[in-house]
Amino acid sequence: MTSPTPQAIQQCHELLVWLIPLLDQFPRTRRFSLGEKLENTLLEVLERLVEAAYARANQKTSALMTSNLRLEVARHLWRLCYELRIISIKRYKHGAELINDLGRQIGGWLRSSKQA
Image 1: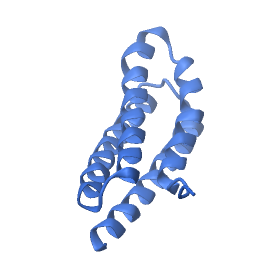
Image 2: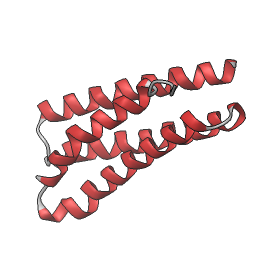
Image 3: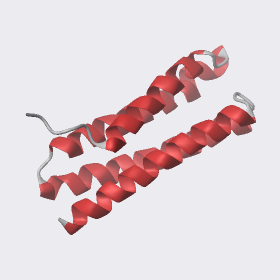
């Protein structure tokens, strides 16, 4: 029997499902620079979270710290999308909320892995 998918992985997956179609609507001048960078950064977050789920206790912390750092980069890229007027304030707020929720999940997982 397999263990359930950690909440952080599920939230990252849902963020990507919401975000990728939005990135496809970016203007051509930004789609292949800012949009692609944001997508790749969040895909890396997902990859590190999956690694953490399958890692031994001593390696879990490293994968979670890396995913947390990459999420911070994604947060700044997302803000840049808003400041360059590529996305509306409504989409910015929703995306920022999803990113912040994911950050809380990663932070909680990181704290619990350090205590274990």
